[in-house]
Figure (tube, rainbow, N blue to C red):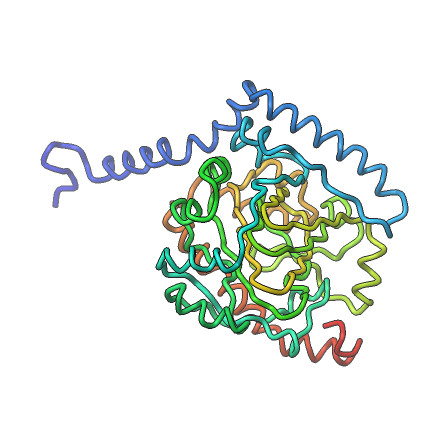
Length: 375
């Protein structure tokens, strides 16, 4: 049997050509893009980078002071971010910004969502009466499995506080343009990997996300209500916290100490994002999130992984560093985009399956050793 095509090119050669073409067109630009920016970075980017690096130098001195007073992130004008472009979200230090002065009312926002008539991913809201979150108990946070349905169907449940959009990755550029100014969408969406929509309707102020971090840079844009964030510099996490990773999520290993008191004794940053506020932070910045009651809506945007900077700033042990770096390398430069989209869409359910598996064991262990408050 011949392994050649009618025109004389072997099937093996054709396959290798297809693979080479894929890497040249899809993956090579990701590899050489940062090199070009290094030599020709826009002036606005240089101003941002120098300001943030100087802020971090000052912060390293402040870390040695009284940890009971939280620090703050600098604020960057949105016009500077627009001028810098996508490189604004590849900076070495967190910052806040204001992407709009308009405050969208819930009675206007929900009709916008309903008008899209789109299919969303939603899940039962966490039962905080049954499982009260504390800052460092991420490994026992339980959420129901994801469902898919129309936003109308989801809203009937969200409006009663029984469901939430949680890591809903179905939103694309056209969807954001219906709820955000065009110039904002253009600035934020260029160069991002994916965005996740979060919408909840809790009756009370809740700690909704215990300490965790992602292996890539992130951007949060608050649309309605507010969230409070508590952040730890990776330098601090490495020295103060028992950092670990599960399913690529950076977590803090469960501890029996009083979580609130521990939190107060660690150098940290606190920031509140209200409607129209944006918040950028690099990889490995462990954070705790508190959510105000009412129709609370926020989008989290994830940027392409930066393999070298990620390895350099990681608070993990060398073994975990190598594991995460290898995965990020394959994600950015080897795996096809369709596979990554599938992995992203299934990632939260895979993570929650792991959490559910460990829940009974961990709850028993910490109930026996420290009582029910700190799991």
